[in-house]
Amino acid sequence: MQRAFSPSGYLDRQADQIEAMLLDYDAPARVEGGIVREDRVRYHLTPNVGTGVQSLVVAVDRLAETLGVEGLQIQTEVDGVTMDMPFHPAAGVRMLPLLHALRGIQPCTSLVGMQTDQRPLLIDWARSPTWHAWISAPGGSGKSELLRSLLLSLALTSRSSEVQLLGIDLGGRELAVMEALPQSTYMLASEAGYAAELLHWLLQEIEHRKRIGFSNPHMFLFIDELAGLLDVMGPALDPLLYEIGLSGRQVGVHVVGACRSAVFEQLPSLRSLPGMARAFPASATGNNHAPIVGRFMFKERHNETTVDIAWLTARDLDTAVELTRSGWRACERR
Image (cartoon, rainbow, N blue to C red; front, side):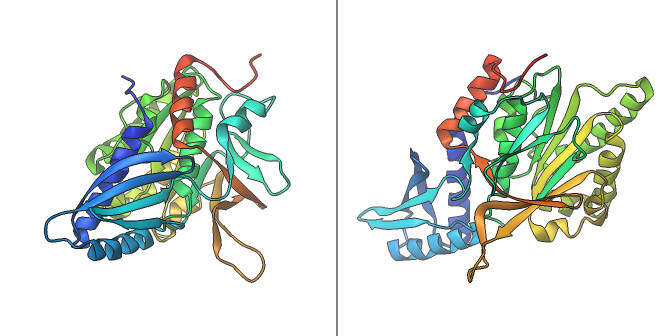
């Protein structure tokens, strides 16, 4: 069953996350708002009894550092703190206008973003040597935004008869939109036990497809963050993902994921998976070599491409879901 999706639900989950982190920093506060203002989201933080405003400001600074959020704006008020957070990466282009402008897109295609030569970077999953993709990057780099754009652009180019979607997101935030899409096969796995069951089921589905010679519709497993699942499954996770990815190439099954760089380094088999494209933060040129938020190096075999990711505003998220559910597709049909 498809669930309703709205930006407010996404922002409510972010508010809950902020509240939980403030509690960990011994500065409990009530977080309200989630008001979208162009490319920023404003929250109002009201300190609980016993929490001073200054302590709350210090905790918010720590929170921003932990999340890797750049450009956070804080303003103290009589009854608390106002916090403005960027909603999308600083770099990149809006996904929906770019999809509307493109011509000749085939089904089963994802939009990555815009290359430095101002050409869009597309992944044709059905025909390209890129069969799987993984984004490894620190928090605050835009990796989850990139993953979500790959997911939604795929949904906007493909019918349910062409693509089926599965998802694992133990944070339950970035991929929550999946449950509102008509191509989704099962509920998003946001708990480690269910996620492990889903992986074993998918391996069984691959074996079933092999027996009957079945490879359509293409099935995509999207994963955001693996740390929690790695804690539960331990060393067994790496060979399981490798087997899914390796066997899945024969029967139309793809693995597309994102996690922090340190977690990815603990998965040597996944890193060596054939057909795996890699995305990682691209550094700025000149004297400042710090990565630019939303800019990635996309590596496929021996080719490397710098790309500014295609992102969605809160309003665009809602529009993308409605377009998908209405049957609109940004691709040519034969």
